[in-house]
Length: 327
Image (tube, rainbow, N blue to C red):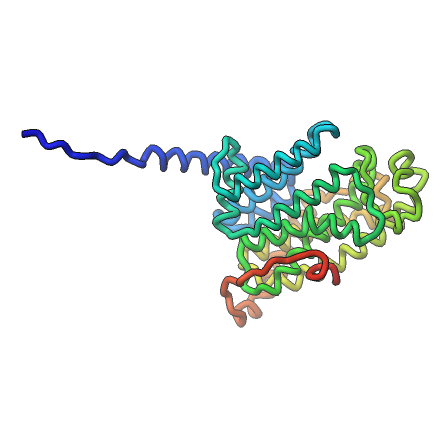
């Protein structure tokens, strides 16, 4: 007599396919990071392998969202933003798509409990770009910086881990400082695209005049850039207070990125804070020196780290403006 045995279909092919998809997403994310941001790519090499992959996925999604807006015609940007919001719904719901980066970000967001409010805020910042909004006051600009960069710092905290919830605010400050640095470095490039991030109250002139004839208002631009980089330095110093709450290698990587970005402001200072004299950049050899500096500073913190508890922090949601504006 033949006995019929019910067999459960093997899940091995499915698991193998999922593993291949994850490996593909990680490779793609690393490629995006390496080609789109040499500074962040350098800093990420200092992270443990698992954190390095997760950070690359976070960066790749942020870059994907940014490119989805910037690389399409102006008339299509509002529709692109709507599509990004629908895709974010899918990512948080665990709905698989055919986009490796989006699926990987969704898995990362769910695994690391990244609050939905953070990527939503980032898209709100991109909506400010879509509307071609001008920035009347410094507070208007800081709101933009919080949305497009400060919340990235907050998401990073969920990805790489914190031992103290109080360090979440300095992490947001680091993102704001970096975005202020970007604003100062990219004045001419942004103006060519019709964008002016320098606040009108700081410029003292109509921002539209900067777009039409940048060189005529060089003194106004230099004064504004000087003030904004001074503010960025205050945010960088605030960010320094949270470094010890990061895991050791994460602290080294984040500190390296902080030093490299702050060096962009220092390069602008060397040309009298005039961004019209060419795009400021940090040479590779100087970046490597900054890595060494980050190693030394991090090593000097080891005795203090030994006296601190190293427990994962229960992170609370950071909101603008009450939680993060003051420095």
